[in-house]
Length: 454
Image 1 (tube, rainbow, N blue to C red):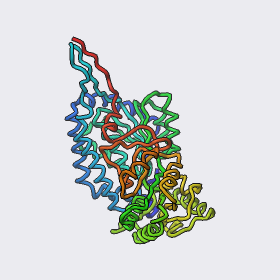
Image 2: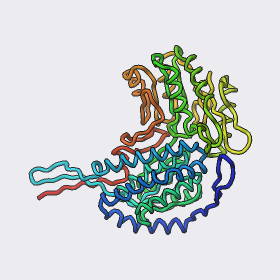
Image 3: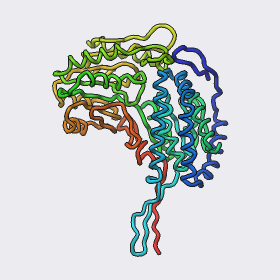
């Protein structure tokens, strides 16, 4: 399997893919290694993860360079991702004892009732390429802390970063047979679905997630899916600083080239502030530097997947054919690398592909609305349900709108952010289950009820 640099289209290296035989061997080793790992104290497991946390900082520059080389994001954004992953690990280390400790429910009249949290066993983590560190630590860190062993399949587009994660975990002291990497693409993933694990945790597209859910269902084991979104954002007429809001929401739409599950993908703006917002938004987008992701100051680098260029072109064409106005960008950059201009479309409707289908690229549709009711109606018009945002001077006004949106996360005066202390979960086509928060720590455990009568 060739690993290609999306900014240059050069082959970085070639790696050998796992087959069913090698994966079965790794699965058997994990099954044996998990028992010894689970027998260790939580403090011992924490010490290993704490060392991994330190190594991420010590080797950040080299890790960021590897990440940028294979996914195309600007080098500073790769550093930011590693910093963000470390922040999440820190929260987990600080709170894992609190949330995985035995709970006392009743202790009276000679009866004790308790809840304990036992590891699932050997879990399969099929991960994503857009934020391999961030979406990775959401799963394998709490899984390991809880006493599970992990079969970790990074995306084929983030294989080298997966190798770095594997190396650093072992360097931190994680036993060899507690974490194994599965290398390859779709075929490797299918082999994993053929095998028996004690839980499956996937981050990726709705289409692939649905396929995994259907394949895993007969196994009757936990299956969590963190899938895509078509996340809406509304700018109300009472915002105080329209220029600042335009800059913040443009970043929410285009950071990491728009390749984020929770990137802003649809914007609705109250008619009273629409013209000022559009002018400030387009000005912000046109100020960004686009180019090789290793150059200082670059905000828009290369897309990770070449195929996405066609998706974005189809969305632009469909929008323009149906009356949309192109205010910026609109096409791929010819030459080496998978580059697409940051694209702004107005005069859009909710019937256009750009407002309904996940874009996962540097493109946004912006629509004028008459009032909160129209904005709320349009924001709900989607099969997805990951996040929704409202910018307004009034928190009560924003919350009233967000309560009507069926999404796992609501934002007031912010967007495109994730907090380790809050559950990360999607509704409908955006997924099943939660990572992060205390729910994400317990997602990798089985609760056991204890009735103890003296």
